[in-house]
Image (cartoon, rainbow, N blue to C red; front, side, top):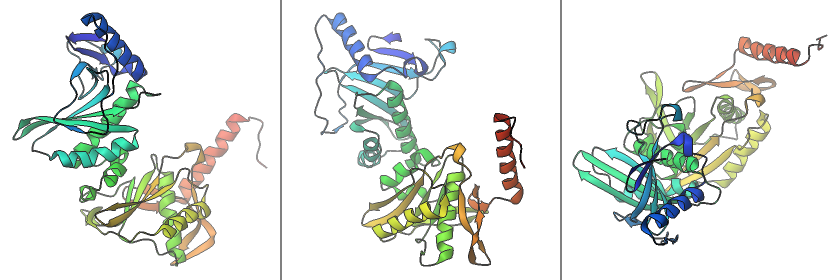
Length: 361
């Protein structure tokens, strides 16, 4: 790390991301003990109390640059809006900084940040801001358990927090923080968001008393499992066509039903082969309203394609058929015969490459 001031360092993320939080904190405290001639002992301040506009005073901070080590220049490498801080009582904090062209209520930021940080094993420490009018800089400090965590892990949590706030301020939603927005209760942020390869919405639950609806549910889940990064399906939002693209334009809350969750999971297990791993269903409540969120994580490539038992032919599900649904933009489509043949041909070619003596009958 390059010292850039009496209490600042600058370091490439590439050089420090694998360093443990404990190691870096102890190193800074050791240096300060030597510099000031007296011992500074780590002493945790009460984490249960959120300090608004009163962040704990800093002892030292590490500014981070994404510049590769091979190109790093201590004078010209730009610092990112994320830094690591050690307070005067030895507490390690991470600071995320963002710019807003209008004032944002601190309470709104608290509601947004707390669920996200909690899900990532972190806690909100302080929120501060400076400036006014159309130039306001906000600073969100959070603490993170030191045990087993590295600076790289802390940095990625801070990146996600900044993305979350930017979406709240009007930036497009990305897949990585979509569920965190939903958990925060800021469902209105999704209004105007187009459906995509990773996002599908339905205004009402699937009608599982109908065989075609069971097939539709399995098909939608399966298509996300076959996509590159997985995806989410939200029940409780309605979309309509805008310029040929399905776009979310209404929140349509549904009633909570745990039996529905169990039945959806049963269909994912029994109608899809192989069953998608880590498939999760969650009811999210806000102001006595409810939506259902199905998360299909990114699946292992070697397990693809995922296949749905049956096919919808003339409004009837034919169990003797199968289909391989894929996401195509904001729509779910069945794989063509040519695409299926290509998958089979590639698989057979791979078998031959691994076993040259293999011959088909």
